[in-house]
Length: 109
Picture (cartoon, one colour):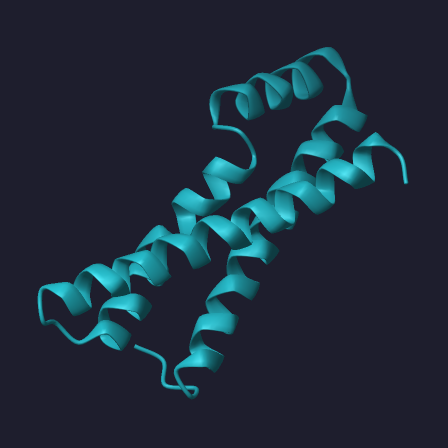
């Protein structure tokens, strides 16, 4: 595997881990304050999904810089790579959400 595919895998699992960690630890906090942990876990997972994507691709500013250089300077390869990173992080966050839904028995919030 080359650097590009390595980064795709890292981005995927980073997004998945951010979402799972936030939702699981958030549900622990909900249990401590006597709120329904499963409901809170699914709500947090839904709310944190976009932040997991942003965290996995390393913030939005560098992504916009690459899009700018790709579109206005003709570096289409850089734009395609960034789109792949965004799609990989989106897939990782979605897989994390599906894992949580599976853990709670398929009940979506």
